[in-house]
Image (cartoon, rainbow, N blue to C red; front, top):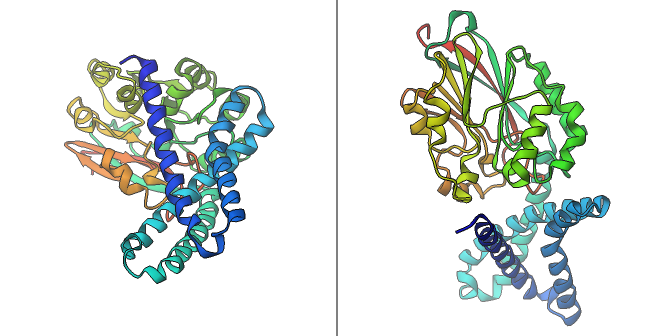
Amino acid sequence: MSETQRFVFFLSVVLAVWTAMHLYVFSRLWTLPRLNSPAAHKTILLAGFFLWSAYFLGRFLAHRGYVSLAGFLEVAGAVWMGILFLALAFLFFADVATGFGWLFASGVPAVRSAALLLAVFFSVFALVQGLRPPVVKDIEVPLAGLPAALEGKVLVQLTDLHLGTLLRDRWLRRILRQVESLRPDMVAVTGDLVDGDVSQVEPLLPLLRELRAPLGVWAVTGNHEIYAGRERSLRLLEAAGYRVLTDSAMEAAPGLVMGGVDDLSARRQFGVVGDPLQKALGSRPNGAVIFLCHSPLLEARAAELGAGLMLCGHTHNGQIWPFGYIVRLFYPRIAGRFTVGNMEMLVSRGAGTWGPPMRLFQRGEIVRVTLRSKAAS
């Protein structure tokens, strides 16, 4: 299957799922007593078509230069995406409780109405939580082979910033102030700095250049950099002064090696074959190894090749409950700290948001890692 065929297949699946979600939710709205009239049904159809198309139309118009209209449509569509998911989840719970209308038939309209009210309430809550600044998660990690001179050095991990139409300069400035207050010795940007369009992020280059650390700012691509255009995304990261690791490893300081790969999820999606971890870590310089990998995949292989610490993102920990249960099917190590062989693995839920600017029951996060000598610990 060619890359174009894979993309068409992927887009077809996304549109099919998106359409099915709308049909399910709007079919429930259709039957509610207060909406069971020709005028209400016409309004539901018109609203449904607009909301179904808004996000994708906004992305399309953004690429055609209609920035203002595209921004409005994308914001509206993104917020609706979150509301739709929560409406679907609560309506599904309501259907299960009523046997999909076969049990307690007389009470079904009231139960579905309550489910929709809960969806609206939690959507507002998720929107407020999604717009709040990330929390800082402090972790100490013992790292095998860490030189005594680097004991106590601080690494700050930033992942999934998703800069673009929704998250722009004001939000980025707030993130940069947070990072600066942590006084990092080095920074790791583990993918998805770009959301969907590099041209939306290039004007932020002066701000991105303000992200600095004595031992460097290190970066790898995420799946969204690949979608947005890998080469242009790499040029942006390099222009910002970041040291980009593309299936490679470099010495950050005597005895400390940074390794990284292009995103593994995008490789799998586009059928890219090979062993990028072997290429990155197989002939690395000697020293303690920190491995950057956007998607939490192939962790056992990374440990086998000598990584002492693996930093990942990508999953957002589901971002909006209960979506995390679905994400966990594809990424079992969805968020948190794990031990894989002799390697520590940290999966961050990310600082930004994808799609809906919403988070339910979890804030975004920035991870501050204090490096410790494994022998001393």
